[in-house]
Image (tube, rainbow, N blue to C red; front, side, top):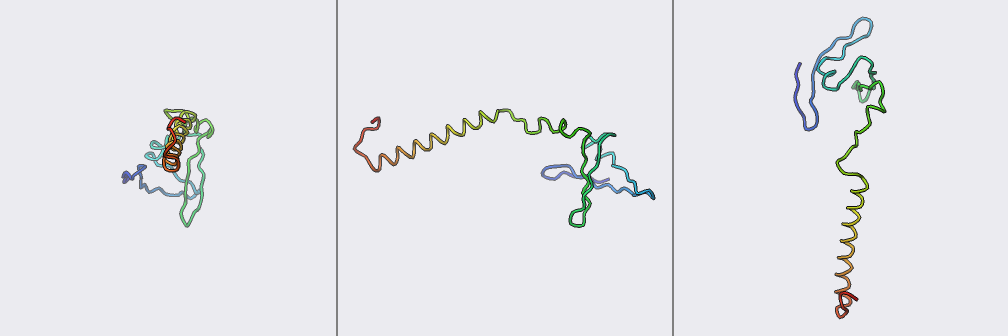
Length: 108
């Protein structure tokens, strides 16, 4: 078995055989890396001459819970972004006003 790290994942190069009953084995290294267990399913897809095998956990919905979890809430992030937008717009307006109405008081 050969393995190496790419920019995002560990890659394994493992050779397995297909039995006379068309069965094969999921290599131990792949099972351990992906956390594959006995009740999992495998989705098989042929794409551009390659066979893509994707492990599917017994309960895919439960397995996906928390995958988009963040340290901050989406509401907090959106409010902070809106505050930054408002500050930029106010600065643009002050610059426009100073250019087009230089004699007016800043607080007016």
